[in-house]
Image (cartoon, rainbow, N blue to C red; front, side):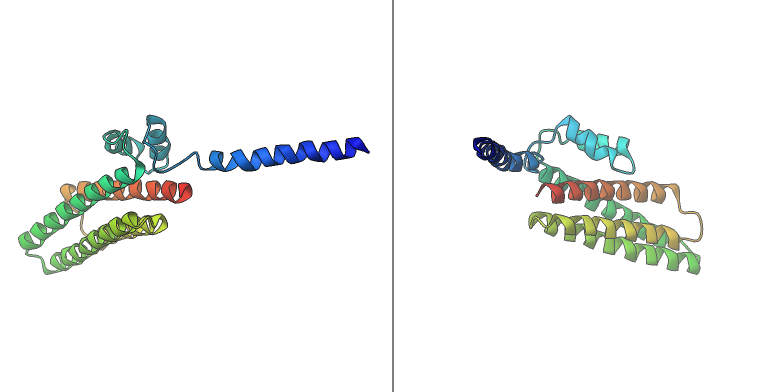
Length: 183
């Protein structure tokens, strides 16, 4: 009979120890901790362009992940603004009315993409990490829509800007998932 009570008691101690220490292990991926090379590699491995991601994020080692997300949002905003300017110059240069309509539509998409990035900044500052990911996806959708609307081959400069913007938004999306899981 004594054995019956000892086993549950030992089991209770193990259970109590697990309950005391497991939560700290579950939150070991704290988003407020510094970005390490291991975390950078983990994040970048989940992006569409890991080498691009590594170049962008290596500048942010030893920052916290929210700061990295903010900096990447700033880069995406700058890239979308540059792309918008490029499309604006293409609109001015073209004499083809159909192509002009396509560029104007593309311009509107990038104007909306900038709004999505700005909404992402608000979501990040409010720690609404799932919304940050949604906004990043919406921005990618806008860039893809622009690309699909162009029936003629887009200039290489525009393709390059679009690709870089989408890569930055993809990094934001991956970071948002990590932040959401770590919150």
